[in-house]
Image 1 (tube, rainbow, N blue to C red):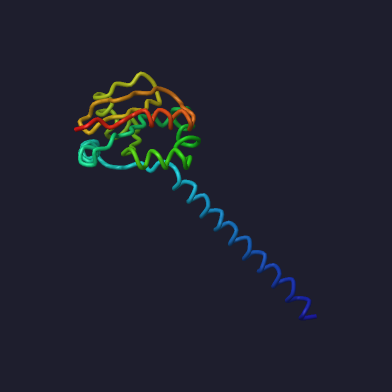
Image 2: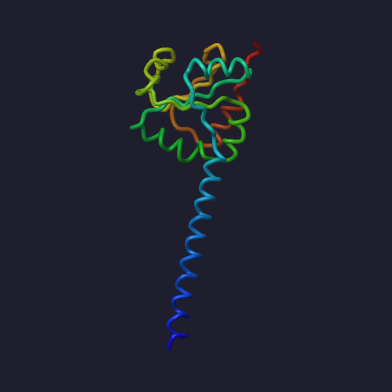
Length: 153
């Protein structure tokens, strides 16, 4: 009788262990997928401009609002793509800023917005090189990014 009692218990714990390891592996895959996309820098606008100038890179600014549907779609469907992240992380200093919170309203005064999302490509001197309004597919965003070149300083 004891043998039949322990066998189901051992099998149950074995299945629980396998289930937990699969969930953990799924979390690792999700984390790696998230890491594959654009990595956004968090710093003050002044520090970002200084960094862009020092590294001779262009700033990619995603100017968004928390309530904006197309902004959320960009974040979910475009910025997370590996090919987009590979290019943008190498070529640009990437920044996303809620233009209605924190430093956003003061940055919005420097770079007026017509709609959300607005994607800016800005040099280290704060000059707008390119401005794109609205949602773009991963392929469109890559094409736009490849068309932006850092000016010689």
